[in-house]
Image 1 (cartoon, helix red, strand yellow):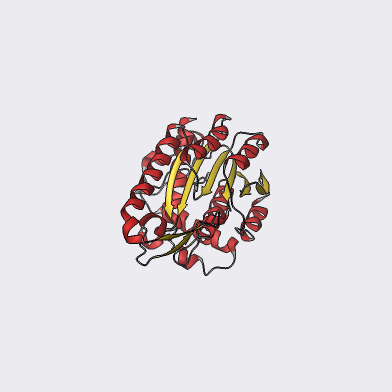
Image 2: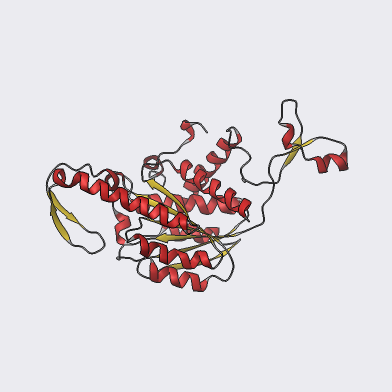
Length: 297
């Protein structure tokens, strides 16, 4: 896919309509796949068209040829409909930004695009938002895309949060095996994160974690001494950045590596994005992991 096709989150922030935003990103993403070496991943429309000179003969549907004696190219192979739900952390720490797009806003854009894309796949779409408890619950349904988008549109981050209690409730509520995407800054100890998600995985769900961070949380680029506030607890701590920068980066790197290793070790997919990452990358990561999941099944 060409870099020009990637949509900057700062540009998306100017689009007020979340439905329009999702359609803009997803339609552009799908059109980009058609002209990229990644074409053939499960972006499914179950379409056939007459074979044209130069088409890849591996895409010919030989069963159709056997019935019609004509060559047709099979552009997509339809998957079984799935239950797809977004688990969206809307705790207070998600409202942080060092530039134009908060983690919460990036998560909103990402959630809307994933929901719209999954409905294009004919999945049943649902959503859970949570902080220290479940805030919104939209059961997965073929008719719930509009409700999910409306829920995303009115999200705000006001309360401190945790993963374990809300996700335990989610595990108890789900009755059918699902594809679950967690969008969170994972503002907790890695063992707590793994414990919270393992219950969902052990019940047969496919779980993908999208770890969303602000660039400043990774690089710690601050220069001037200041009081830094913990958005979850409200605690303010005086910090001289120059003396702590390398230590902070080391600890942050260890945190991310531990999360990745522990989650992957429990058969949970892990992707990390900063809020400046174009949404196309996130969609492709989701598509790649879903393709892998379908092969494993």
